[in-house]
Figure 1 (cartoon, helix red, strand yellow):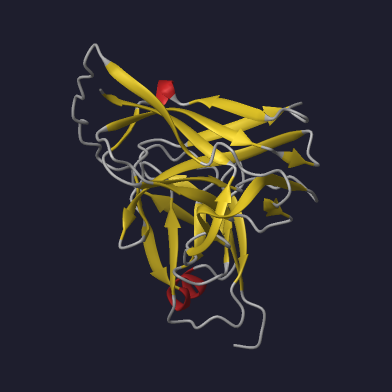
Figure 2 (cartoon, rainbow, N blue to C red; figure 1 turned 180 degrees about the horizontal axis):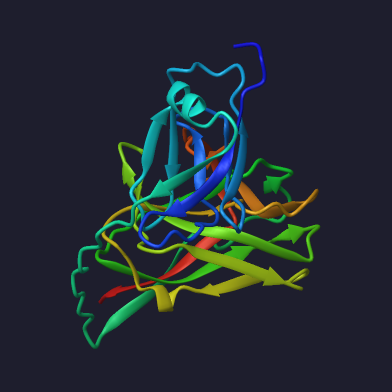
Length: 260
């Protein structure tokens, strides 16, 4: 247990043999995890972790792969390849929107400017988002809006996730394919609008929308204007870690569309 035990390797698709970038890899409900790089390679220190713990590899559109730490360390003494199997996607329900529909902004569109919260030199897999409560359903997500952003990066790269709620915590990711957000030269903009319409994201109930740190950007930060007791924020420290909540209204909002 005391000696260094580092797992390294590459994640591939079992269907094509191609590398899978930005795979979440971590100890299930622990706080030791990482994300594979853009070529599928990863490295994770597993020293001082119970060998009976479960390590999970997960990626949108693929079946998750669970294995005990003892088993994978035995199998991968030098480096290894981990294959993920593509999910058999069911055809989504056809949602017919009437000619008359209503648009509304939900979330935290008016956070006060003083308090800031967000990403600051975090580990890969760190995730941060807001709870959005719905009265109307089904609901189409049209646009993500980020408010009062301050950053030291010239360019940011994050993954967007949308989760349905499961017993007061984020549960299943409703996306069928990964969505990545790249922003450049946006410093000073009060509101940043990201078009979600091409992705046809439909939610049926309360949901969490989040950003996830999946690519090393170097030292720096990305923070949002945030209000105290003006919303609910969810975060987790790395891939596969437990979710935590805090009573803060992070500066994120969503333009939604629903039947009038």
